[in-house]
Every structure is written in C-alpha cells, then in structure tokens.
Length: 153
Image 1 (cartoon, helix red, strand yellow):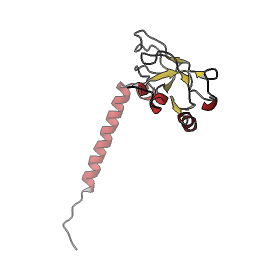
Image 2 (cartoon, helix red, strand yellow):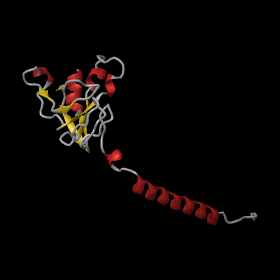
Image 3 (tube, helix red, strand yellow):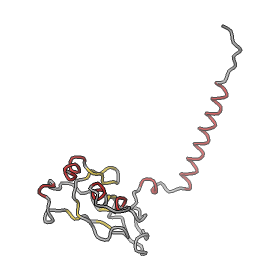
Image 4 (tube, helix red, strand yellow):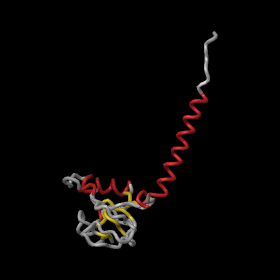
C-alpha cells in the first residue's frame, strides 16, 4: 500500500513552540505587572485579604489583618443543616488560627465552645463559635471530615 504522504510533524512542532514562547511571554508579563499575593492570599467575604495590613473594604476604614492570616467559612454548617437563607453559605472571615481540639458535638455546650479570634466584616458582625474541628491547608481552615459528619448527624 503506497500513499502520497507528507510531513506534518514539522508544522505541528513549530506551532507548539510558538505557543510555548507565547506562554513564557504572558507569564513574564504577569509576574512583572501582577501581584502574586492576590492569587496566594485568601479573601474574606468582603474582599479583604487575610494576613495583610491596611485593608479597608469592611466598614470603610483601614484595618490591619496581619494577625488574621487564615480564612474560615462561617456559613458552612448553617448551609449544610438547612439553616441558612440566601448567600450566608459564602460568608467567610479572617481568623488568627484554625479551630481544632473541640469536644465531640454530644458534649458541646456554650461553656466549652471555642469563640474564634477573628476580624469581622460587613457580612459577619460578631466572631462566631466554632462547632467543628478544622484542618489548616495553606491559608484555609477546612472542615475535618469526622468532626463535620458528627456535627451534621
């Protein structure tokens, strides 16, 4: 079987190389003109960057978030249990540390609850009590599966 064949690998290789060069150029431009912290730093529900100073998105005045580097989702449990209305499930605050070491939900009471050390915003007016343990992943406080399932049950 003899066919009239042509070489297309060279054209594909040149197009691929052009995309690699373009990707390197866009990456260079992004590093020179962008802010890497906007990708790596979590934001609360008002748009303040957790862990950075001079944030003025909440309440209009500049506030220092340097002691609150972690993002905690305040409305997760309300949303999971059907207690939230509207967009409360997206409420997030910046906290000093991720809650952990909480007692089992069966023995949970207001006396042994852990009130979060947080920076309030327009969506969350008072620092909430933690009802489930979390695990720190990068700058996020993610719910621990066992503690969360126990709380939901």
